[in-house]
Length: 424
Image 1 (cartoon, rainbow, N blue to C red):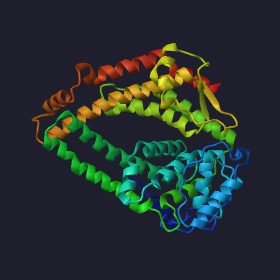
Image 2 (cartoon, rainbow, N blue to C red):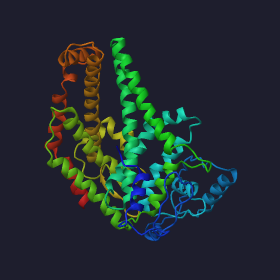
Image 3 (tube, helix red, strand yellow):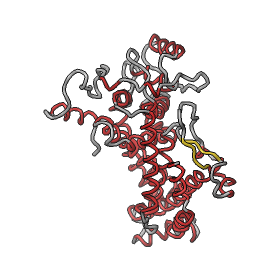
Image 4 (cartoon, one colour):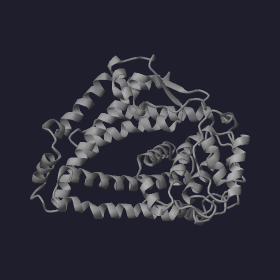
């Protein structure tokens, strides 16, 4: 079970070797609505300050609380008192209306996906609608980006930020379980599987939905101040974290991506194994794309740089949403890489994802057929599943399909070229 932020803080306060229990060091439990005391580390990295961009789009983040509070937030946004992206400034003013101040660019990277999560969840007017929003691709994408950023900094900041990683990962895991069972039921129903097999997923979906409901009840229901306790804790901990200077933080992210790419190059993945081979390769490659997305404009691509393959620039992936980069207008020194190399990366992730989806459909339906007693053995169940899903022999050959992609990735060596560009 993931460590909760509340339990970690309670343990720290009881530990005589923990940080000093002065007013500056203490942080409240999630259930406490009173804002945490400011501490010296909350000082802004002035080298990263940038003015609010008048042309930057504003996220529709509902402030909650009283009409006066909402008016004050809008007025302060207009005044430009908080020198962050308007969406981040609004988030800070929502959760720290009296103590909000500009945060560093490093902190802003965390608060950008958080602001979108906050916006999306405020669209719910009922508990059930809130649970539905957690399951949307837009919300999950931001959770995944935030989780990636917290993972990148894990062990580099403080225990509170490490606990935030556990908390956000728990959300992502529970959303993943819920959406997985929904997709498996859809696969079974669309394939015309026996009714007993399709209905088997109803309880699994209900149980997974109940787990999401617990998250909503515990930390993601608006309090009387118009604040989500879970978001309040996240914003607080990001504000208190002691980030490096802009230059050093840029270097940290750059090195992390290079390391992930090198680790993939040096790891031998087993294409016979769906979860620990094919899916693991995809997950590791996705870390690279997640870190670039977390950079929030730090990374850009250019078609004129080291074009390795004209064909990839004509592939649909090159003009897809997966190639979109946040604007670099809040960056002092953006990192620019080859568009063709980045397109290769994204296409490989997508192609492996399609194989993973087919594999999960086969294995999920196989297991459901067995559990619902519609098959006598795993081999029989898998044969039935492939037939029901109408997969061709080539589509069902997960190893063969994945091996082609994997071998091409290794022989073309574009990961090494990408690493080299990140060094220049």
